[in-house]
Length: 121
Image (cartoon, rainbow, N blue to C red; front, side, top):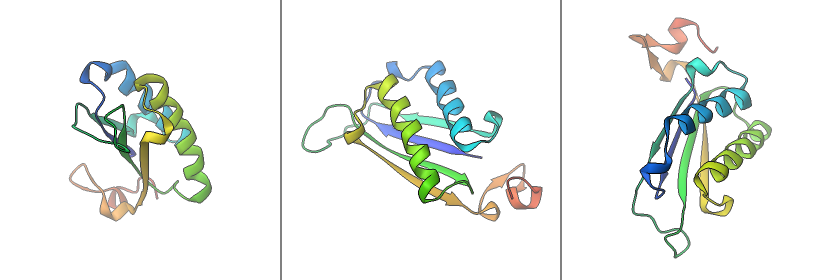
């Protein structure tokens, strides 16, 4: 169920299927969960001002059930910032990533909840 959602002023033309697939691979590796559960989405072309300029920037949220914490988030940040900078050219000082540790009973999947399915407990 891990979800990475990036809102950015970077052009849609840079958001390729390959970039999204690589993003789910980065997520899978940093979390230690199967890539088949990872979702990456990007909202491009947003009017955005970061620090008084309109250069490449963004904000993101990275959600997962468990596997988030003070030390874990440092590892997630290192992997995601490097990936985003490499492929989209967003500098590390023009991107925030918010980490959110979700409860399994607060995530729906297959007509019920992740907790009811016994996934990721």
